[in-house]
Amino acid sequence: MRDFDEHNITDAVIDRFGDTPDPRLKAILDSLVHHLHDFVRDVEPTFDEWIAAIGFLTRTGQMCSESRQEFILLSDTLGVSMLVDAINHRMPEGATETTVLGPFYLDNAPHFASGADIAVGMAGEPLYCEVAISSANGTPLAGAIVDVWQSDSEGFYDVQRTDLDESKLRGRFTADDQGILRFWTITPTAYPIPHDGPVGQMLIATNRHPWRPAHLHFMITAAAHEPLVTHVFVDGDQYLESDAVFGVKNSLVDPYPVQAPGVAPDGRVMDGRWRRLDYKFGLKPMPA
Ligand code: BEZ
Ligand code: FE
Image (cartoon, rainbow, N blue to C red; front, side):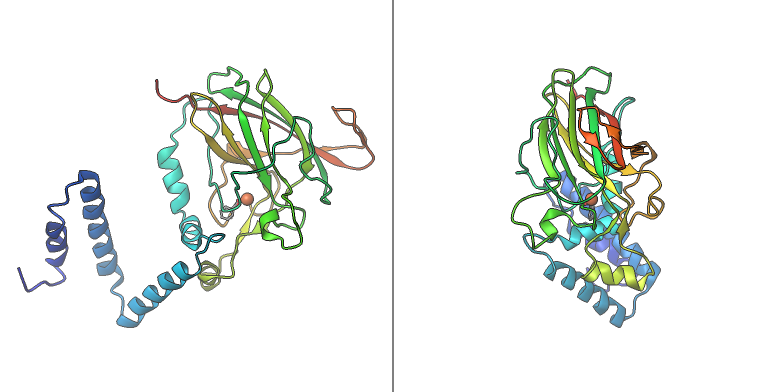
């Protein structure tokens, strides 16, 4: 076939993929060509705009390295990451809602015993956390593995700082017989997502800010349950309504209540103001 025009080219391209042996790949390509061509017909880009778009995607790829994934950041800031997350995590009653993983998770975080302080000397407002892990039906999950990571009081993760030679504000815990673990840390603060690349330029060009509201990250795994990747956000944060990556859910916002000086639950004497986080996580059982 020849003489392709703006009306018949879409079907011609889809036809050309007609012999794709993998039916899922074929369905994805059919849909991609349909939506991409409709997008182009809708926008009617000039050649300069088309070249600018190619340049943006090229720079996005060139920004990627071992420690930087600009395409995921683009997906995050376009709301695609949260859309994929929502489609894949339709949760039953009693299961905690999920949100984005983000780029700062490390799978080799140091192990800590319950009660430890993961701030290891980092400055900030002390925070005592007690978290309970159960199955969605409320059965405690003894031995659940809980990874925690967060930003420091200046809004940086340990992996972003060049002045640290060990990990800070991250750790891996094992829940006790009741599915509970306790730890000390510092109250997290809001921080900007990495915005010194093409995604940052997109945010500037569209009058968007790069900030995420303060949160603790949790990744929780337990036998026969789907892994849970989520955050607990600090209520009152000014960016809860405008998170740069659309990750906030009401059920994941906690007051982190401020505590007066006194004695903490583990006997630690607190001279100044501190906070508490008490949070219950429910995991979705794997299908039998
Ligand atoms: C984070 O919460 O660590 C994060 C998530 C998405 C993009 C950048 C950072
Ligand atoms: Fe984060």
